[in-house]
Image (cartoon, rainbow, N blue to C red):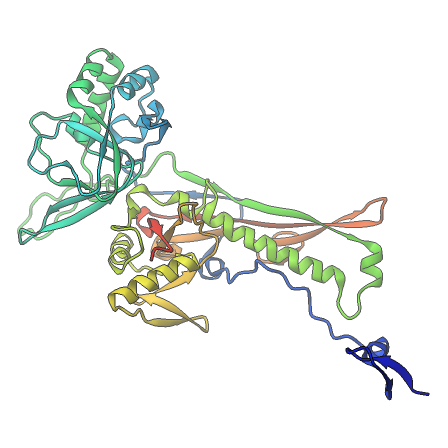
Length: 468
């Protein structure tokens, strides 16, 4: 007997066959495996060479270096007034290792705040260099004279940078460059007269400055290392120099980090609901994916060993105008000029670079990486990584690295064989079943990263994205 059914316009008609709603009760539904947002390509994990660390700690031995450092300074602001934090003055090479907080507070109190508009000259080449300048906010170009008399940008400075501490140690010194504001700039200035007044009242600072001058006079090679004496091009039988290679006496050690979670599954679910997919395996698969995403995030952002925080400050450069231009990428290549392996940037940063190239009529090529076509600059692939942060001001960073222990580059660190290992450096350990019949599995992955020598990693900072 036909069953009456109502149509959309409210009229009845006779149904002549079985409907789909009823038919589905006898049909088998085809199901997908559980899907998960947030799984990325994780190119850093794929391309980083991994070194086995059996003892859980990696000691990085280097040649002895006399480089006293060149850090960045932090500030505090109250309304429009900006002050340097006294202890942050230790980031300047001149005060590295100086322990007298009272003297540092006296110096910090004598800095004078000054504002400059975009395009204004802060210091001019040829004028007397009689102060140190701390850049609290904004961007500054150091402009020098090129080989043929034209002006050229030597370096771009930004928040926390400074110049020139050596002006305070010398008299009748002159600026070798012109500093010009690219954006509105706030600087703190310590005149030489104010500096000398504090020094005169502080015996500890006088002693520290003498030690600093003695350290500066020690022989160094171009990398700031203790030199290896050699002779070449000689004739006859001259006395050859004797030498030895000195090492750092307190090398840095990297202890493997860990990312962990406890996966919990009810035994009733694990026992009964396993067709067509094993519930435990699917739960574990997605948990492992989340741990790998966290692993790459830590390799980029961890303050102890993450690449963004472990690049040498001399290897950090700023964009000249804001967006990432071909000129900026070339300058970044100059910081890692020995066999660079790949760039690493947020996908939006890569898009911003592509827009700047199109604006200039430049079209980067693409190359093949592991079966994928990726953009490249000067033949170096630009790999996407969504773990590189984008700040609230819509700025980000671009990393360039040389990889591999044989290249003295950036390496990943992981343990050798570990108990209950399902992948290298990742294990799953059964923790038992509690009184509520819930099974627990401890899922762990161990890792770290090291930059073997400073010029293996360079960073282009304050890269603006989204500018029209």
